[in-house]
Image (cartoon, rainbow over all chains, first blue to last red; front, side):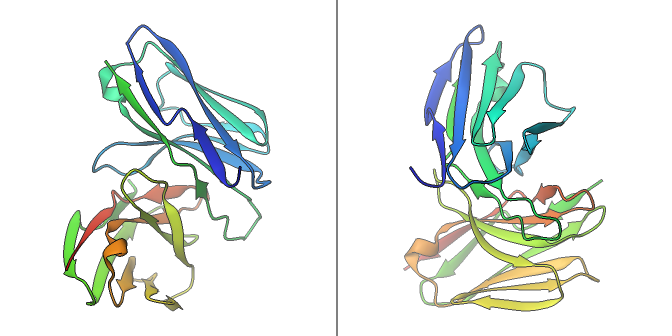
Length: 115
Length: 109
């Protein structure tokens, strides 16, 4: 595997379900991100992990819970979601160096549908 | 508040040139990125500008004017595979990326 991988690619869940999205980066980066992408809206940054420490976005509902067990893996745990949470969830990673380009590399995303 | 503006959709002809504009109002500036995203795929990095001027990379060029809060992405010799969304993003004073909603570029034969 190369780059950033995400599983599953598609997920349909009911509002009472609990599921998890997985992201793995094979680039040796030190930062990982979760984004939400809705149609015709800007990418919304949900969570950032830098050097395995979480930088929390306070506007994200508690029904989304991230987990970063090590620098290569990132999870997004989902529970009691709402239909408006249906979107493409993108994971990204970067090598954060002070003053550097710090380009983000994205995974292909998980298309989530909440019924 | 922080804001990135870019046109929602543009149409151009194969072989032609197209310019996609991006204006921004952010708390601080530490660089501007352009990404390309084909439908159903991951965004991929195209260019980065931190100083004023033009950065050229093959058929793609990106321009920045920090005093005007303005950038554009110039695509030359358009090909059908250039049909995609183009995302503008600015790194703010906290080094977080602020994203535009993207410009969907449609290329016609």
